[in-house]
Length: 228
Image 1 (cartoon, one colour):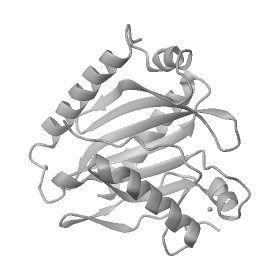
Image 2: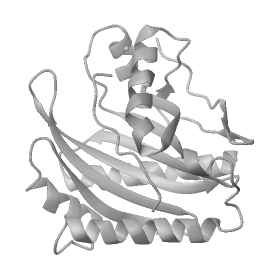
Image 3: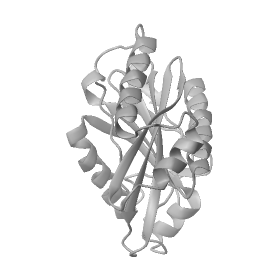
């Protein structure tokens, strides 16, 4: 089964320009631009970015994934770096599956994504009984029952020939003491023969948050495909 990391909400601190850097995955170079309105975090920017990226690297290491790039809503990132906010609510990450970085999945890309979708669909059906077929209704269903410190997988919410989209909801108590619910919508794809994941983290108040995030995910993946 393909491994994927469901990043946790953390205290996430002038903003790097929203452009795509060359990122090496195995023997290929990939362009991984941040979403519109997001700015990329960079170790050269300062200690806050370094601390955040090190924290994400540490969380991903046991999962078999590797962080390729991380970005956040530009306004939030500026305020966070200036110490005006403790949390970043809107984040995006690209990750690679370390075990497959040296291999070329180009020939079987469609089968890889089909398998990933099948596995995640089965996992979602196990975790959410009587799952609603409509994505928004499914998210609303889970929002009614998810508990603090609980993560609920919503399963596959969209599928394309070489991209599989899935989602999850997590409720947690922030450093400020406020309860928040985070929606994570992520895409699994193959770029230049490499398995790549794109994660979008947003605060969720209703099922429409998930469908809005899915639309942004799809737009972003179209941009990524065009760039590579």
